[in-house]
Image (cartoon, rainbow, N blue to C red):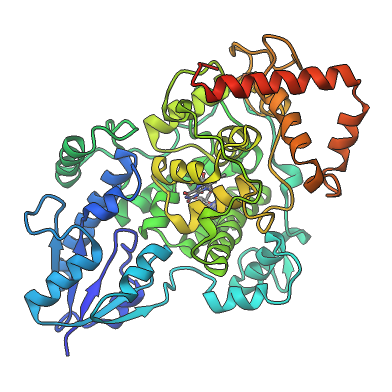
Length: 508
Ligand code: FAD
Ligand code: SF4
């Protein structure tokens, strides 16, 4: 009997579980560009264009390989507007009522597929290296789910950077050699850029016409949109970016949005690259002596460690995870996140870059936009929607644990052992944002005091009961307690005044 084989926009891999199991002579692939997916968040136009262009090219490739593909474009008049709607329409059209799908990356769609009045089979998405069962098994009976322990298991399991049963070089983690302040400049031209072909150009016109109101600049558009291009982008990174990836992975430079980062998360997350091929390419560069161990280990850790780990947490914790708010933060997301003027240079640069590139690297997301959100007490659900919208790599399974868990501590500390908060000093050390800023990073109080300096202490005092017994935070409280009482009062009063201006919509 024939089946409808669903391929979603982030499942563009030829070895996808459902495609492996299906029969091109009998089964019918269903792919659909639908308003429910382009509209569940106000996605960045570049993100929509990336997914639609890559879907169209993937469908063409499947057809070339002999598959029958029923493909719905966003502006087709019969478009049912949602994935379940399209499956029902195709079922009626073909008379096929069995559906074979690969598990979607968010609860919303998993539930929608389960509710369909069709005979739906969901296969686990084995493009990830750690299955649900393996993660549950790892997490079972553990008091704390620290990434580092998970990562070591993944090294053993994949054999990546292993020397027998020992870690290559004798140490699991080389971060002590990483995290250097920014270099004066970057000695390579950054991620590979691709000129739009006919398919991409057509999609760009469609996105321009339909999503002009969304935050984000559509053109120029340079993302890879098929597997061959994504592999070239990966090769360029391995050659030019990887050697100094470790050293500069936490650095931020005003005029260098990408530094030594790979910009491959969009390709990994929609299926154009597989995690193992990426890690093997990095390991091979190390074995050839072209990239040092601290960089290669750090890079591989992000992928087989962090990326698999956050996905494990998302599925372990269940559908309510994105709505958690352990610190009860209620402030509305200020308009500066959507590009309204701010005098804070670090934030304005991170947001401008996000608008232009649909990209910011990890430390900008965590220690600039995330850190500010946390110390200013912004509602994590609003931040979640923002991150889910503005980045080309944002899909809920990876975005929500990073935002709600790692960056906002809104899961109460499942993912992070302490909140990622800092004063301006950290940003000053790791970037060149502070010198041209209207605020003075060295000022602790007063009209020009860096807002991070004020809000950092405001955060710590308002959550003292929760954090002061955390051994990793005791020092911070000791520093605060040693300050003179009038100074502490001034800091808190100025922080309050700043937050009032922020909430009143004033330019801060
Ligand atoms: P590189 O720095 O070159 O790292 C290589 C790869 O490692 C990345 O491509 C990515 O696949 C993986 N990786 C690194 N860190 C993480 C991490 N913390 N979680 C998962 N994978 C990781 N990543 C997303 O893919 N999608 C998101 O929606 C997303 N939202 C985030 C939100 C916040 C608040 C924070 C703090 C981080 C978020 N991240 C997200 C993680 C990380 O910032 C991006 O994966 C990374 O910036 C992607 O750029 P890159 O390819 O240049 O990464
Ligand atoms: Fe950001 Fe403060 Fe530095 Fe300005 S002084 S760039 S607000 S950290």
